[in-house]
Length: 126
Image (tube, rainbow, N blue to C red; front, side, top):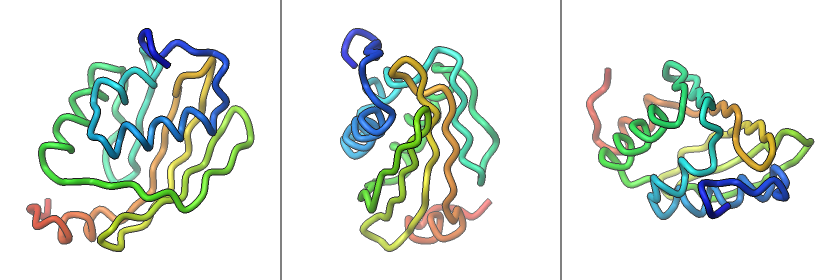
């Protein structure tokens, strides 16, 4: 997905595999390149984030607040969707649903326990 993320040959599973690699590297630019310009990232514990610029801000803020690691438990594909089940080294678990169109993420929804995440990372509870 070089050249701004444009690579229509990638299957949803391959896009999510790249997403995990870039997430674990805290590569904000690389992550953002995987999203459509008008993509939506909705982590259900938070309000939906719309558009690449806001998704970039979200990742910058989150990577500055905590060291996050995504350990893949499984990735399932039912095109145009890929489903990621994950855990992290601290014991947090979650899943993400990625709708992929022309090799880019159009919509993402994630489920995880925000209260546990905040406590594990010593962050203020909202």
